[in-house]
Image (cartoon, rainbow, N blue to C red; front, side, top):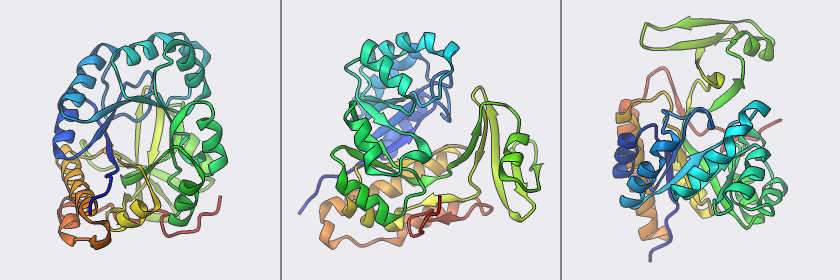
Length: 311
């Protein structure tokens, strides 16, 4: 017995990377540029979109464009033309959180499919249904939801559901390039360390000296990332049974070799489940190659999948 296999999605920062990730097992890629989307691994500009989307389609994958930025008034003037370019490139959809994107897409690119991703606020079925009534065909759930909450939300909505399955998560963002704003935000002592010229900048809180939060700054401001990596490979069958439609692999601040290995492992698990869901059993050989490449300073964990989150 076979079953429909869910999507395996990853962000890509170049056409070459896009092709490599699809060949490793991704069935969809998320592309874009910093002017319109946040936390992309690299810029694929509007002039490259037709080539990038065509490359994904040629390899049998879908290509979505990331438009998840929170726009200021002076940034809106370029949004209509960009959305038209995305539609003309035949992208399979856009990812957005700002209602300004929805309003402009309806007027200037009405054929685009809409994936609602409001980061940490995607926590309930009413909000997802609100955006579904306005045209969204997919909701991206908050990473803070546990397994029971994900299954319950899935049972209450009529649109696709996406869950982050692997990688680091963004825990704080500021438009300002000032890390002090985060330190004030958490309300406790913290310091910044740099681990060598090529290993980046890390935030270390006084109360948790063994946890290092990666920090980077770009055109969209300051991003503080989680000290550990989500890895839901061992729990994939639970999410499949719950009806999750898309699993997202976050590639940020990881080498291509690592991301390719992750995609291959998740692809192997998904295909094993597809062949016979009833006979599916987790195989540790899928996880071993990821463990071998995992940064020893970053633990692999289930995130909030088995936790009751307090907001």
